[in-house]
Picture 1: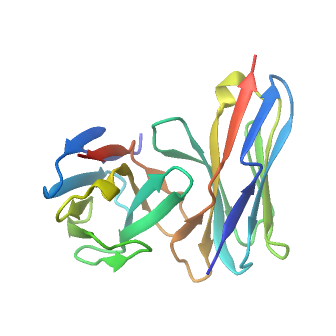
Picture 2 (picture 1 turned 120 degrees about the vertical axis):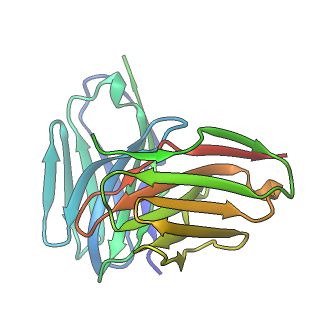
Length: 112
Length: 111
């Protein structure tokens, strides 16, 4: 059964720093990987979707990479801002297109 | 603007009540999902549906049922609510190769 781990569980940085959030998964036979953002008490918002054939995706200050063979993905946030404070979740879909398995998230706090 | 809409943000129900959580999407997506989210446990899949009138059990279906009579609507039913079903419930929809879209969540408290 697929397991998804996110490290660290929480991260606090000053505004302006570049940072990396990590996601690892146990079964490398994935269909795609998604990164989501969740604000307190709210639903999830999709940030980036990486198909299994892709190595990375970029959106604005966000860049996500995927290394299937090692079972790892990273989310890079450039020039962090207080508005980036949220919980970031990683989720993978298994091969043959199956349902998403979520990590427990990294809670990010960016202080002014 | 694409949307997944859940019928309630907050609900308080009594133990033993039958509870309906409604979810509607306007993107003509084939696939819809119900999750619950609890501190320390993350998101867990309750039920999902790949088509109208079709349903599949997720990881924690006990105590729940679902209904999908129309493509855009996916309902989660708690047949007899219990206090251990107090949770945040999240609905999502997607199509093959698309990102998943989530509703705003329903915070259910069973007293």
